[in-house]
Each structure stands twice: as structure tokens, then as C-alpha cells.
Length: 97
Image (tube, rainbow, N blue to C red; front, side, top):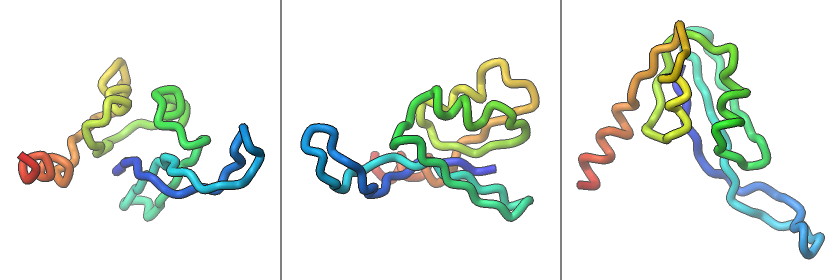
């Protein structure tokens, strides 16, 4: 499975003014080519460890991620999970250097 986060403009209500406005929020994307499934998760725009832990609590198998700190949850006491680094993200680090 592949997992990455990205941003999207989301229409939300401003708590102070009560008006609807667009704000950049985070969305999680997962893709499993073997099952031919893509899944998107939006949890109030959060990128928190708690959101990731809840979403992947029953996951086991191989997962490819970037270096975002939250994905370290797969490195901690998770039997049956092997995490791989995303080569596109690694390449970008070399290009940017």
C-alpha cells in the first residue's frame, strides 16, 4: 500500500465570523494496487498521529510512505508491518540539495 498526505481547499465555517470560507486543509490518501482500491481520509484537516493511528490500527502488510514523522507509528511495535521509503520523495531531496 502507498500512503501520502496532501492539501486541498475545503469550505468550512469560520468560527469567529460565522461565514463560509475556503481554507487549506490536509487529506490522507492511500492506494492498494493489489486490491485496486484508493481511499481518501479527511478528519477536520488534521495530520495528527492520533488520526493516523486510528485509521491504520488494523493494518498489516507493506506500506510505502514519505518521511513525515507520523508514519513512524509503523516502526513501533507493529508486527506484520514493513514500512518502505518513497523513492519519489527521496529523489526530491537530492534534486533540492
